[in-house]
Amino acid sequence: MLHSRVTVSFGRAIAASRSPAFRPISKLSLAAATPTRWCSSSSSSSSNQPPLPPASSPSSRFSTPTPSKAEWRAMAEKDISKYLSQTHDRVFEHNEKWAAEKKAADPEFFVKLSAGQNPEYLWIGCSDSRIPAEQITGLEPGDAFVHRNIANLVCNTDLNAMSVITYAVEHLQVKHIVVCGHYGCGGVKAAMTAKDLGILNPWLRNIRDVYRLHEKELDAIKDEETRYNRLVELNVFEQCRNVLKTASVQQSYAKNKFPIVHGWVFGFNDGLLKDLKIDFEGILKDIQKIYNLTDA
Ligand SMILES: [Zn+2]
Picture: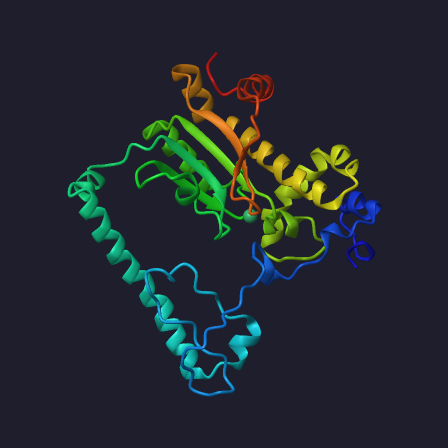
């Protein structure tokens, strides 16, 4: 059990709760959904082998379940090769269909796309495969500049994230910056696990820091799922604060009154986005007591 092995400092809060909410999880289960199973009766090389998923078709491209680990182990080598070939090829098949549909709907679509970008939004989200920014928001190519990483973190030493924010604000002049987390985030759950996760340790420590900052509030929540969900929200809140600590955002807002920073959380249960309605201006004013990077 986790609480019998808690040794790190943050863990005392969790250990004290004796909560089974933060169970150890394997490295491979980070951000993983409940594994799906494929149960096609399509052809297979052997009756003892699991059947291959159905050949790709436009309607099945994004719904073909991935074989489970057990099914992988049971598959013949040639079936594995066939499966990998199918899943590789279907991406290109879909790309051709998508390009044709776009061009049919608007013959100038790619002419306009190649002219340059002027996105309204910078989207900072989790790398989780189940939360494609454009698809859940109805945004089109060109609408959002997107940055994703495990648990939608904004770290001041992350050259990637800092470059994305600077470019989006100073050059693209985005009007909104959205930090979007999601309930059931495997990265957040992993961070709350008493386990050495190797190279992930320094990354996930940022989330442990969020827990430490809000330890009192989180420890007061008795229901485990509610506490975990709240940590997801608080992580989004803290990453919004980190966005507001950047010079590019502070200086642009002082000059232009944009970008506005938003904190959202996506829920798998209903597919809806929840706006945390952060007090953007209040937070900015508050953090500028210490982190002011404008000339004012
Ligand atoms: Zn996640």
